[in-house]
Structure formats: C-alpha cells, structure tokens
Length: 119
Image (cartoon, rainbow, N blue to C red):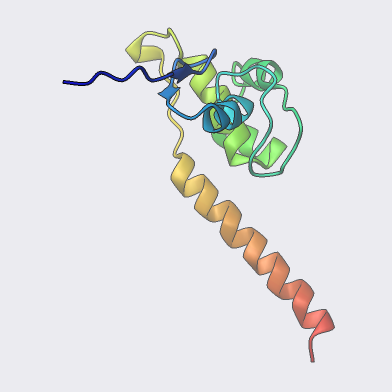
C-alpha cells in the first residue's frame, strides 16, 4: 500500500477548498465574501462590498441592481448580508436571471453599435 500527501488550499473568506493553488488564488480574488473582491463581470480591480451591503438595508436587490448595474456585485452583497442571518431575514436574489438579463442587454447594445459600423 502506498500513501500520498497532498497539499490542500482553502479560501480565507469562505473556506472553499481545492488542490490547485493557482485556482484558489483566482477564487479568492472574486470570492463573494472577500471585502476587497474584484468584479468578474466588469473586470474591476476592487468593489466596495461593505457599501453595497449597507445599501441593502434601505433598498431591495432589484433597486440596487438598477443603481450599480452589476449582478455579481449585488449577489456578493446579498451573500454577505445573508451570512449569519436568521432564515426569516434572508434576502432573496435571482442571480441567474439577473445575469441573463445583463448579458442580453450587453448583446443588444453590441449589435446596435455594430449596425452603425457594419454595412
């Protein structure tokens, strides 16, 4: 019988684990629970998760989405706000639907821009 020791890497923010240090380093950069996370949708270097969580105290996720225009940043704020909350205080947000709508809007804008340049 042989045994093998394997390095395991964990996210400092959400405790997700993996065997590849590069993948876990990439995950930590965009982890919803990282207060200085980068936005994978807008390729932003950092987003202010704490400010968005504070905004959720006075507005719904849909209103916040209209204000900051990024479904991933809203989802991160909702995840942080829900962490440790009681089940009756959970904030609901449909990230998949919001991202699909955002992608559709981006596609429409791209096609409209192409019509001006393409014959």
